[in-house]
Structures are given as structure tokens and as C-alpha cells.
Image (cartoon, rainbow, N blue to C red):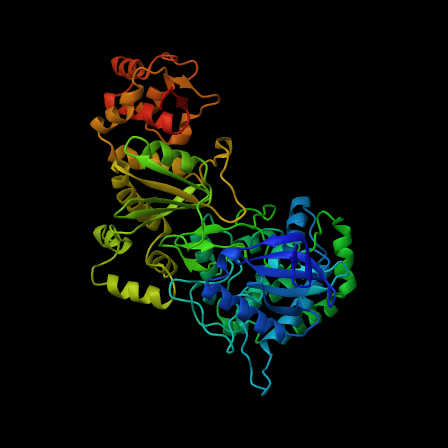
Length: 606
């Protein structure tokens, strides 16, 4: 492809805002060309963020910062030509080291830190033409945005969410920008930031390089935010025995909860590292970084040049895992321009131009089956139910429904908290106002302020999902659409994720909602057209994934391979289970229906 004088080659990365290509042009030679996604070209917010990044980066000329060579608009496309860094992102190095259980030398880790802090010292001290400080805070210092050349140079990139006095404040209420797991406590809480916030992020990166484990990882994004706000260093202290004591002390100073107790500046932290290295007799030179990369044997396939779009970042899980696609956190879409970067509220329909990957009409007889099919094949994304009068958005993360956004506004979280006695009626308005002031959702705010346990929040959200989804199971007609992150596709049924941290997956959640929403008359109506169809088991059926009750499980097991009623019709299975007192009639009918929807059994005509 050609864009002006730029001849595009391999695509290096795809983020939530832009895609990056290796490109050639007569003036600059080989570059990394960052192009805003066509679907966002007319979105003013994203375009403004793009121009902000270009304006900021063009002012920052430093050997440890990815240089911007050109930017503008060609044929309606916004582009940015960046210095081509011939080497991997630090995230890729970190992943490979963790997979090989081969930590980088302490000298190489400190060498990376020295160059990274030199870049941040320059960024934080940058001034405009009149000599006035620009007050830049990067806000996104993480392994995916630190690039390493094959010669051992360290380059800081991706200034897409910087905070600076020369750009407008584009973080709106309900938005929290950054990468979960690398934010500072004040960033996670939506507080005021200065350069010391970036130093906390550097501390997280250094700690992970030394122990090869996610530092602040929790069982959920909410728990990770909580661990960040509290600076829970349990993982660090458990696995840092091999780290020299002076380096431990240095990193823990960078990771202090109070910014005033951290290093005063990037320059001060850099000098402290150099002093410790001198005392320990360690070499922090660029050559040490280069040789460390060589020892990891990063061949061309593993060191594919990476542009500063944040691709290659690890996901919450293990450091060995990578997924540069969107993720969803409760109430927000997380685009791949930064791993777990929080960008915009999604309690509304997807943006214009975000076409669904799958859409179909439903009626009262087909909705449950189609919804179950969509849940079985969607890991991360949105499932939208709509009709002429209302809509419901089910938000999925890692195979679970984590939120249900109802256009009618029924069952708001605040009222549920008050109804359960968790929050007093007089406390609710103040809590809502304070959460909005901090740019957090109500539940997030209450958990981070320790006014609500995360387990209690999960129970309330589960009740909210049930109250909002249940009425739709009796909807007469409408449309169902599935939206997944760019570059992602629907799962094969065999790839449907299992339960997450012992909690029910999305299909089991649907079963729970349907159990309370469907009466016997509704079950009989939904099964009427297949009463005389033979109920056949699916290969390798596992009814435990449906979250059935013991009687329901017994009823379905009777129709599975080796069961007493295998090969009988739907009607005969329900009658036989009832006659043998394995389950009540409603339990038997419900088990058969959910087995059909969940793909455990099938019947002609269903």
C-alpha cells in the first residue's frame, strides 16, 4: 500500500486507536508509520488525542525517546512517522525471560532503568519556546512502551495519553487512563499527578524484570486496582530474595504510596541507581543491555521491530501471556494502544462505525438459544440486545458477564446497595458525587475507599445483571449483535473459556438468570416444537459447565452418553426423569432446555 510518499510494508501492531506499519520513504528511509484507524478518523476525541501525541513528541528530541519524523493528514488519513527501532518491546523480552525462567542480569535491568530514567528526566523537565515548563507526565510507562534496539538502546514511546500544560484535559468523568498494573496509586484513584507518578511505574517495571512475575496482579482488574491503591507488595517481598538488598531498597522507595516519599525526580532516581551500581561493582552500560538481549537468543521472529503503540504488552494473567487486543474492565473498554488502558465509558451503545461481527433477529422462541450461542463464542466484547423501545448491553471480560447496561436505567447499583443495607440512603448522593469527582464508577470508588468489599460488589453486580437480563428472556422480538475488539473473532465452541477463578462463566450466568426468569409454562412453550425429537448427546459433553443444580444435573445426565434415557425424545426424557424422581418436572424441563442451548445435547428442529 502507498500513503503519500510512504510505501507500507508489514503491519507491526494494531491498537485501539491506531495501527502501525513498517514503511519506507525517500526522505526518512525506514520508519514506523502510525495511522489512526479508519473507523476513528472522524471521531474528534481520538483525532485530538492523535494530534496531542504528535505535538508533544515532536518537542522531545532525546536519544532515549522514539523520535517523530513527520505527521499530518494524507487522503483523509491521519499519520505519524516515527523512528524505526530495530528491536523488541521490553514486554516481549519480559515474556520470553519469564517463559524461559531466565531472568535478565541485574546489570542489564539497571542499565535499562538508567536509560529509561534519562528519557523521563528530559520529559519531566521539558520547556516551551519561552522557557516555561510543559509539566509533562507520561502516564503510560510500561513494558509495551519501552523499546530496545538490538544495540542495547532504550527508547520510550507512546505519548498518546500524556498530561501536559500544552494539551487540553481530555480525561472526562468516568475515565481513568493508563495501564492497570503499572499505574501509581494516585493515578488509580483519579488524583492529581506529577512526574513522581511515572517513577512509581518505573519501579513496577524494574520489580517485574527482577522477579519475572506481575507485581500488582489481582484475581480481577478491580482487585488489581485495589492492590495498586494500597501498594500491596506481597508478591515482590515473596520472590525478591535474590535481588541485592541495596537494589531492593531503591525499588521500594520508588514504590512508596505517598509521592513525597519517592524520589523527587527521575534524575535523582537515576543517580541513585548509578550510585548503587558503583557500590556493588555493576556495569550499567548499553553494552550490558545488548549482551543480555543476545543471551536470550531473540531471533528475528521474536524481535520483530515494534512501534510505540503498546502492542506486545502482557495481559493480566501470567507474564508469558500476550494479547494486544481490546479488553473490557467493568464499565470501560480497554483498547490495545496500551495493555489494560482505560479509555472511555461503555455504558452506552458502541461508537458509530463499530460494526458488529455478528447480528441476527430473534423472537421469543429463539432468543435464549441465540444468546447462549453468542455467550459460548465470545470471550471479550459486547453483546447488544435491542428492540424498538429499549436496549441491553452485556459486557464480557475473560468469558464472564461483568456488567449489564440497560437503556431504561432500571436496577441502578446505588439503589441495590441501599436495599441491601450496604450503603445508607443519606450516604448515596455523596458517594456518587465523590466517585464522579475522582473519575471512578461508584462500585470502584467504594471498593478503593474500603467502604465496600469486592465480594459484596460482585454480588450486587450479579443481582443487577439478573434484574436487567431476566425480563429480556421473555422478549417477543428484537435484534442481537456481538461486538468484539478489532482483530479478534468469535471463538469456536470448543474454545469456550472455562470458569474464571472459580466463578461461573457467562453461560452459567445465563443459566442462573434463566432459572429465576422462566416458569414451567415458558419452558413448555420453548420446548413444544421439539417434544418428539430425539435428544442426542454431544461428544465430550460436560454438563458441569452449565452451573446446574444437582437435580438438574441428574436430569441432563440421564440423556447423555451412557445415561438411562440416552436416545429418547425430549418428552420421554422429561417424563422418565420425573417418573424416576431424579428431578421435579420443572427442573427436568429446564435442564433439557439449557442442555440444548449450551450445546450439551441436540435435537432436530431446535
